[in-house]
Image 1 (cartoon, rainbow, N blue to C red):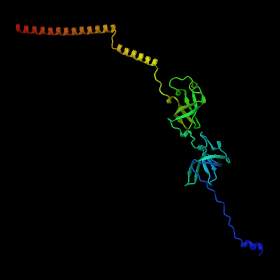
Image 2 (cartoon, rainbow, N blue to C red; image 1 turned 180 degrees about the vertical axis):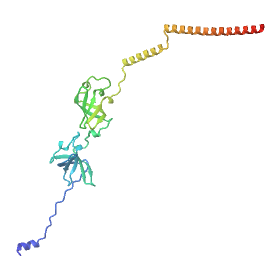
Image 3 (cartoon, helix red, strand yellow; image 1 turned 90 degrees about the horizontal axis):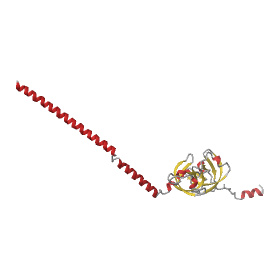
Image 4 (tube, one colour; image 1 turned 90 degrees about the vertical axis):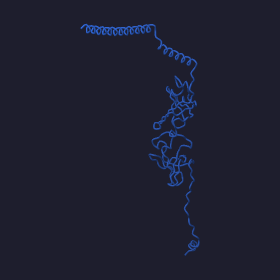
Length: 260
């Protein structure tokens, strides 16, 4: 046995331990960096360095609706994401590319009041960015009380406006907005009040005239009354005559009986 072999046997054996996995403490809303490992039809699996790949659903890749994750991501791409949900029992992590506080069309509710910026004006209305990835549209009829000739008479591009959500079509990404609903109802002007009062007066007079007969109608009514009276007089006279004639027949009959 050589001296080198004796030295090796005498020295204590050092056991090399495997490197411990560094487990990061995760929390919902936490920002993480990762790399896309695999794409599917419904999302992407991303390595964020915690020993298990996190899943990012296709709906969490953009405010706007996208058909495939390939429209946004590719394998090997480095991404910044946020923890959306943690399932510690099943060791699952859900990610989103939408920063905390970001709203989408899924969060909107009818009747909600928002502040937005006019992005485009057309002949029939104006499009307003309300911060959900889709511009809402204010139809010209929803801009003000009364007639509006053109949307540019009310708003300009870049103008900040308050709007109310009145209709949502999430499948098509359509949002209908109203400015009119947030404006106070206009009070009738004095000229309008006078016109309304005049119309009411004319209507009242017309109703009163319905109860007042014209001279011709009055004469016709009197003639009809006289005719009715004459008919009634003739009827009574005829009845009296018939009654008198009957009495005469009875009288003669009695006289003949007495003569016999």
